[in-house]
Every structure is written in structure tokens, then in C-alpha cells.
Length: 110
Image (tube, rainbow, N blue to C red; front, side):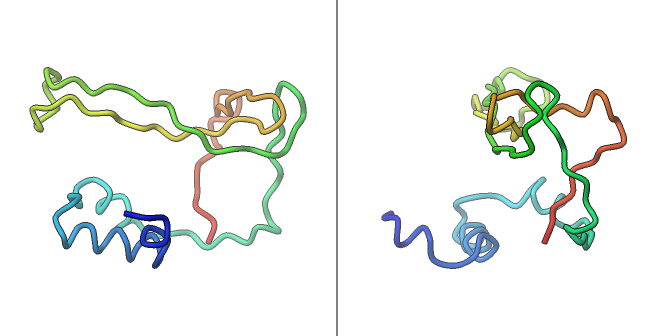
């Protein structure tokens, strides 16, 4: 599939089409997306500052973990790669953690 074909339509449209074609299953993602989305005004937010360098720009990266086919909760019978999204400081690469402020919650801004 070329870049042109992949970039057509919104994420939701492409995801829905992939589910309908049987390329992916709905599962947990459907449950997560069924939760109501908060409407947040970006002007009402406070910048998150890197504890290492003071930077305010963050980059989305992924940890990749192997989910063993032998794990009791893995019902697929196959080893699976699982990607876990996290944020790292754009300037120094320090990972953002909520250890210091447990009240911080991830919310998607629309």
C-alpha cells in the first residue's frame, strides 16, 4: 500500500474500514473510544516543564514490549508486540512521568 493510499481519510475512517475488512479487531480500542471525550480549551492549560532541562516541548515515542504466547491472559496463542506510548522531552529526551504529580491525567484535546 503506497503513501497516497494510507493518507486518505481520517484515522477513524481508515480504522473503521480496516475493521470492516477484517484486518483488525475492534476489542479494547472500541471500549476505550466509547468513553466520552472532554472538551478542553488549550488556553486554560498550564505548560508541563521538563524536570531535567526546563523544556516545554514533548515528543510522542513508543516502548515496545513482547506479550508472550504463554502468558495466561494472551488468548491469541501467538507472541505479540505491544507498543506503549510515552512522552519524552524534545530537548533532552527525559521521559515524562506523573510520579511527582499523581493528579495529572492524560486527556485528548480536540
